[in-house]
Image 1 (cartoon, rainbow, N blue to C red):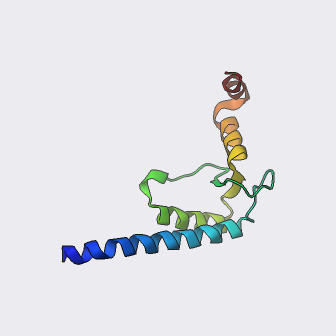
Image 2 (cartoon, rainbow, N blue to C red):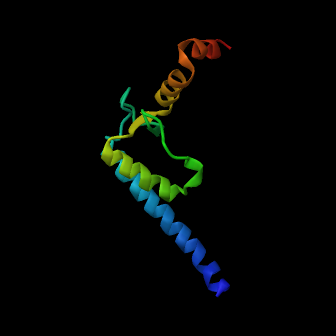
Image 3 (cartoon, rainbow, N blue to C red):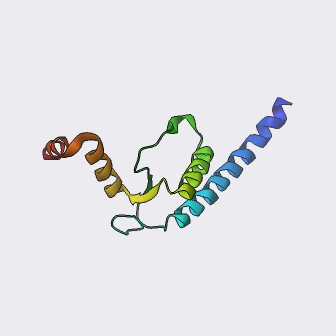
Length: 105
């Protein structure tokens, strides 16, 4: 019984990755496929403007993308490039003075 499970594990893992990749493409399409700030298509990330209400570490990749899809349908997320997402988060978390001091280092 345990042996059969070991044989299936790589298939199941591959299936979940393919499914999460499909959901990721669906979310990217729903959100326009471009950064909401500068319009680039490079290094895109999901951004929660109001903050994420769940702990990302508690969910598998597949489960996270399913949540992102639901949040995209409700209009709770947007796509930002890595540069804009980092800048937006720093400003919101640390304020302009602390962020400027951190950049000066």
